[in-house]
Image (cartoon, rainbow, N blue to C red):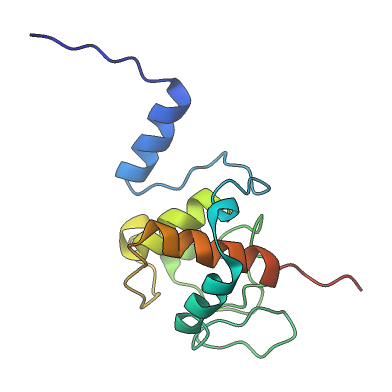
Length: 143
């Protein structure tokens, strides 16, 4: 018995990028479809795992990892003054919810050769909660 399934091109491309560990190049940084399913309060608690290495504002002193202010829509590996791994310097994608979701699930698989020492958040809801918090906490304050 033979089965035939038609998969829309967009789904096939996104699925291939996930399976191959490649970021989605044309994802929309304004898309909040993942963070919309998250709980900001729970995300703030989850960020406790991140804050040893990351700050949320540009004015805070940099830690082991780059500051996360204005994260969504920023080109990966572009934070001025931070020493990125070669893999991150050569990465060609923008931080979107989709890319961050894949990164947070398995950073080493998503971008082999990066130097982030975090194993990842395997739970889908934890990633949604964290992204909901990051959406609020990383917005640059107006001057």
